[in-house]
Image (cartoon, rainbow, N blue to C red; front, side, top):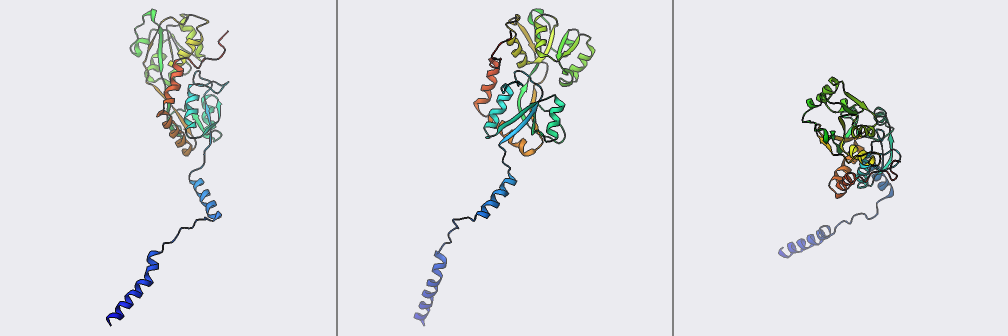
Length: 280
């Protein structure tokens, strides 16, 4: 009986061994239909984005130029998208309302410098910041420390300044009979250096761009005083599709973490965005 039990146990182990020791190899060849449907499924979940179209307001030197693909903001955007292997499909320059409508009707993917809180659009973080400032000739010794100090001065603002620069500035401007606005930002700089107005309100990089551009036409080496009364203005991008907005936002994050971001901003500080042929 003892030997019989040992025999049965040995037989049982022999029968079980292949089941325990033998592993099942995975299928090396996936059927082409399975692979095809898997690809379609993932593309629906994560659509391939290899190019994005943009709209923005009419040319704002040195940020964008309508006649060529260059500018501080253009180069930042291109560098950001390159990090995600995405091309700029096109940039349509249009007045603000039309630029916004192109995105809301899905004719264009995203709007650069989009106004805040547009219903139905999805926003990225700010690509960069604009710094609007108050500029005056230093020789005039104007004491400007707060908005009220502007109330008796002749001021020339950019178009729709009062809509963008806050209620306090708007109240001062509306109450000042010597306040006016102009569409041509180069003319603002000309009028300041020629002494036609005491103060201009302009974005810092735009001021420096035209100051350098005009140096062969008038003396722009005259010392200028800049007073910062306004908070930096974030320049966000708004898209009609959240997935596209997320990709652009991710690209901006990657760019800001690289040396290239500051390198492009430094080019603007060094006046590297001047036209190849200076003004006659």
